[in-house]
Image (tube, rainbow over all chains, first blue to last red; front, side, top):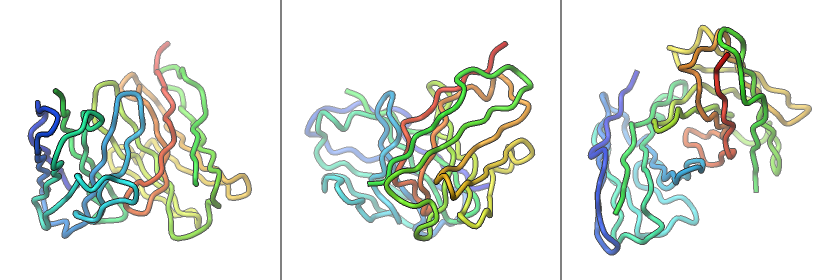
Length: 107
Length: 117
């Protein structure tokens, strides 16, 4: 199984800050990585697919980069609604997916 | 706009079988190249992919759950279902269904399932 490790687990920031979350894969997953935002009591929401492609309707302050085993999600200028938990997910094999453990972004 | 809705018992006894159904509206479950996934999340924990099914009936499951999981599809009802046998307290979680193209772009709101006697 491919393991995904996110860092940090918790991130404290303020409105207007630029923040970066890292996701490391235990083996090469090319660019088959997605990022999700989840708010309490809600289902996850897809932000980024194929490492750097922005899902329709997602604000451009969100961006993704990376390939192989190391990936980042960057939020360029935090807005109040961005305080949530973020998960990465690999789909290198369409027969077995896995998620990172999550990064909680709080004030 | 595709919508998904989970349904099923909120309480299941230990050793029994958990069964949930996901009803899909706004799109045919057989359209496109999508598969249909189940994901769960224990309280305060991360997301765990359980498995998925293609309209053809082909399934893939997380290896550690494979012996207990069955995902089935009913194209006539535009629904797919999850069956998890021999449940324990460790299976207590919110269960989500999602439309799957590798990424999970559309999700249900989630169904909370508690395993308790």
